[in-house]
Amino acid sequence: MSDFKRIYLASPHMSGREQKYIKKAFDDNWIAPLGENVDEFEREIANYVGSKGALALSSGTAAIHLALILLNVGKDDIVFCSSLTFIASANPILYQGAIPVFIDSEPGTWNMSPTALKEALDTYAAKNKLPKALVVVNLYGQSADYNKIKDICDSYNVPIIEDAAESLGASYQGVKTGTFGKFGTFSFNGNKIITTSGGGMLVSDDTELIEKARFYSTQARDKAIHYQHSEIGYNYRLSNVLAGIGRGQLEVLDKRIHKKREIFEKYVEHLKRISCIQFMPEAQDCMSTRWLTVMTIDPELTDKKPYDLIHYLQQYNIETRPVWKPLHMQPLFIENDFFKHNEMDISQFLFNHGICLPSGTNMSEEDQGFVIDRIRAFFC
Ligand SMILES: Cc1ncc(COP(=O)(O)O)c(C=O)c1O
Image (tube, rainbow, N blue to C red):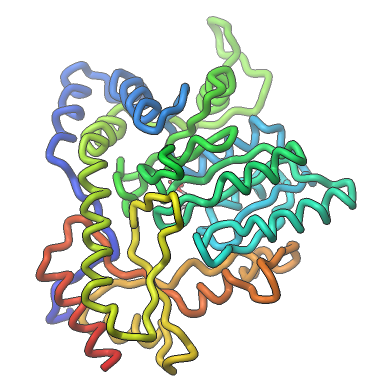
């Protein structure tokens, strides 16, 4: 048992309105499987991000999986994917028996490098093995550079799946993330900016494909009174109770973004004099939600490493995490191809030197002040 109160990286933060929607589900006895909360949550998310269609699912991973299925990704197909991300961006590629090829980050956004993407596409085009799809991740609340990425993909006719699990509410040139590709996917797991405890959403302007995804997500049941199935289906829908949590959460999303950005500003304000610390940049024309405040420790200026800081803060019961370990460095993907930004492997650098700080919107001023004091004590 620690003498210190636990300070989490990011924990669920309820608005207080969730139970109103849950109660309605109980009152109507629409506990399962679908119902008004699911329909409304889909409509509200589509409205919020500006997409024509939305499908509420059991997870963000399920949303990526269905997007790949709808793009006809199958055995031995190539799918390009950001390397600096959580494994869930790439696992569904494996579910389909396809082969992921990983693309490095760029320093300006920490997201997919357009330079590396161009090189990868040129290389695979020359081999006559163009990818069936590209999974682009918006890391830690920040959009990738879609103008460049879309131009490159359009020139090869490669569809984009935007993994916006970490960037709900962020924008790029005034447009909400999740809407730049053929499909966008969101996650509502416990540490996300809004949560349904577990859940996800698939969005697209192609409402026919959203309807097709709806069919696959409910066991691909053919139109017949009896149970009849001609294709493989999945049990991927969100329950009406959990969608109720989502509706209550969505009402406060903009408030949460504002708070996340305040938390980030406070870290910067109090730590900027420590010269070896650099914070994740906010790219031009991007409005990051700062889902997590992430910083790097400059190895040219100090011998102190992120793991030293993680262990030091652990003694004070403060939860921090390294930056995602790039997928091209994972044992699972050791055989897979990887394209670097330039002579430097940017995602590996960010993994080696980055650390995610407590960023929960329910963290008190005192708690954040305590984290800041401990970080200063570590460096001074
Ligand atoms: C970048 C990224 N993609 C996908 C996912 C998967 O979402 P879920 O946990 O809802 O399946 C997550 C979060 O868990 C994520 O951070």
